[in-house]
Image 1 (cartoon, helix red, strand yellow):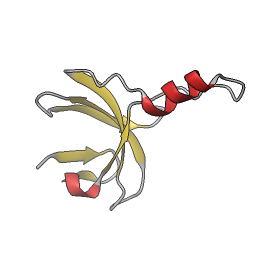
Image 2: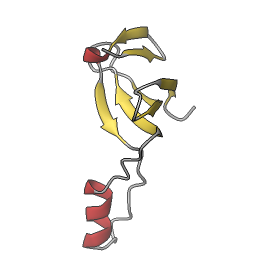
Image 3: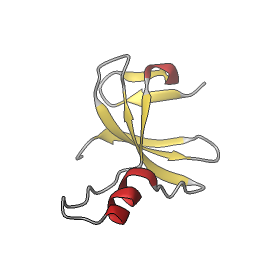
Length: 83
């Protein structure tokens, strides 16, 4: 079990959180179907340190950014969105 440090609530069980994926830049409304498909479905899924979006869904409900190693699951940092 991971112990995820919520920036607002402190360390909590991973069962309280929802994974939101990698941060992605939304394309313009005039983007092609291929650009929209890439935005919606294609992720880099890197091996090693990665930046991810998470939501404390069973707690404060806040979204935040987490830097986590996808191999070891070690959590390096968590921070508020936009911080």
